[in-house]
Length: 394
View 1 (cartoon, rainbow, N blue to C red):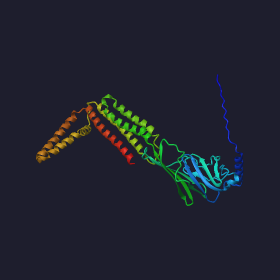
View 2 (view 1 turned 180 degrees about the horizontal axis):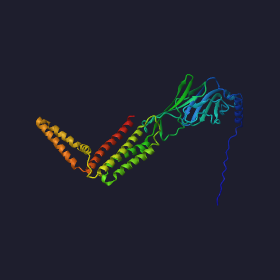
View 3 (view 1 turned 90 degrees about the horizontal axis):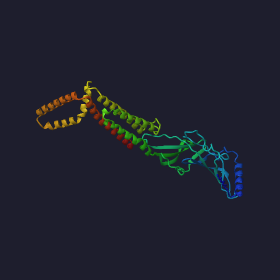
View 4 (view 1 turned 30 degrees about the vertical axis):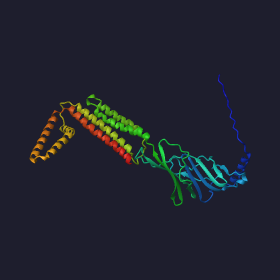
């Protein structure tokens, strides 16, 4: 069995017929003589503009045609009218990315507060999407300065600021930006025209981009160097290098949606990602080269220049030690030293020739793998440290 319970709400309110009659009589008196809503209160009308983040514009001006004595209307000092019943200023947001329209023209039912001294206050609930020039050089550690510009769309209408700051009372904390500063100012546009500019200083919250972009890219850069620790005879060397390359491609496809799209300047983050992708491509090339050398048939003749380069790089430390020993022998007789050095050079050359003849393709590939690993790890470390230094300096 289902039971339906009906709950009736009784809404009661005090009926103030005196207030209704007084307000109606005041409105008839004020608006009965208000014959033309297109005529300004005076030749030059001052309108105070106040910007409330996120969605309210507050306009105030003086209109002598709606003044009254409160004593004659039961002490009533405030009355509400609509924008269709009195004159309203034509103020527009200049740098909007949407269609440009006069503030309040899309919703004429918004009431205006009129006081007995002729002061009119208009709180317009409107949301504007504006554009500003962004600098993404230091993304995601960038700071932005954005302006919201309001201008009068008719001659003789002077906009001035009721406050030098922006009201943040209605603002809820954003998940991506910090508001580090805000101010408003009045700028001269033409000799007889001013524009009010509301400026916001924003700082991006970088933690999301550090966790989702920066740290994964750096970890992948160091993980890609591990390909040189994979033995060439396992057959997994190239597979590992290609897996790292595909990981970079997948990460770049995700990161590209977060980086702001602009051709005015390129962010350091974008350059860093391109360099890391290039290094990963080079990693695949080097891994393929080592594997190809390792699987060469021993009957294949060896290139003399390739073996000489690899031997020279592998024996650089031994060469430095030999030079140190030759340098310590300079205290001996010049003739004996010259003969000794000549013998050492000839001996080293002969031993190198013999080593080149006896070296197999597998040994050549393993030595090349060691050289590539050292050079690649050094380059990765330098690129990562350079990127961090650039972000700190900028």
